[in-house]
Picture (cartoon, rainbow, N blue to C red):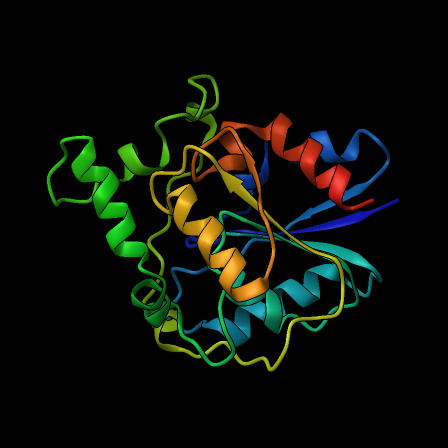
Length: 221
């Protein structure tokens, strides 16, 4: 049996994983969807890591799955890992802040380029960026979005090296927020890994839960 520890992206809402959890647990595995009140300015990256560690509740050899900004929490979580899997994630280098990551990787420019190619103006549209491929029957079940506090964006990711465990990167082919080409390049440069590219946008666990579950079950061994 595998215990999947599911770390959400900015906003921190555990319901993001609601379509994925039943697909992971049908084979007898365990899936723990972590909720982090990222709209609380009193919390930052160290507190996020503690919340994730507490959710593991002493389990050993967990598969930590980090979505989007959860990539900055992942290396700071002191749990015994079986594997580490990034999903449309911000992959940091030691000491980097989430705010620095966008300029360092060219993420903002990459997003703007696909917006311009689609004939869109400079105003950010969360629905266009995040919800464009989430199934219509799933949309009504989404929790109200939380606006993440500014606190973690200026905090360094305090780790010295990646854990010596199998590490994988999953990229949504149709991601409009972190375009696939950007993610593939960052994974190669920062981890020396070739990602698995699957159909779906930034909210991959909602847009293509079955496809993501298949990849997670396969990579977790």
